[in-house]
Length: 176
Image 1 (cartoon, rainbow, N blue to C red):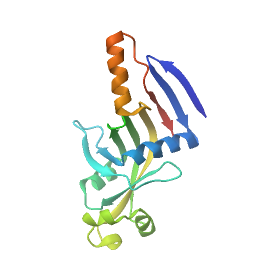
Image 2: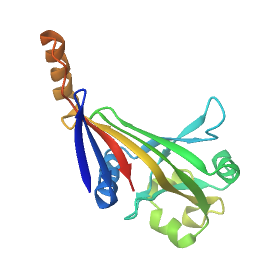
Image 3: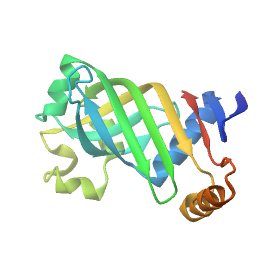
């Protein structure tokens, strides 16, 4: 189910179910690196770059992780996390708030494995330190210009010259 309304030049497009999962996959496909924030009640929040290994068909985000990392300890103490994605070349942005858990499931780790992960886990999928983090989205919001950086810049410049409000982009909530 998709609903659309216009508000101050941006179009609000809240997506749910399959549409929300497809949009989540699309936005993450363009930029799989996010800032992964834990300890959300502490200030400043702690965030570190992480690469999404997979977005499954349920909209769950998966990461490979070391069991001895601070992130693992943070999740054990408070499972709430926030992920921030930014694809500035296409002017796409996404934030995901969710519940994280850590698993040592070897089958899942093998499914998520890629050759680049060997840089962190030198013994491969059997590295004793490797785990997977599962993030179940509870709230997700996105902003997408739909036209990319150059077209957006031209529209902004034209808006500044003409004095007319720019009608650019889509934003919305994803209910996965």
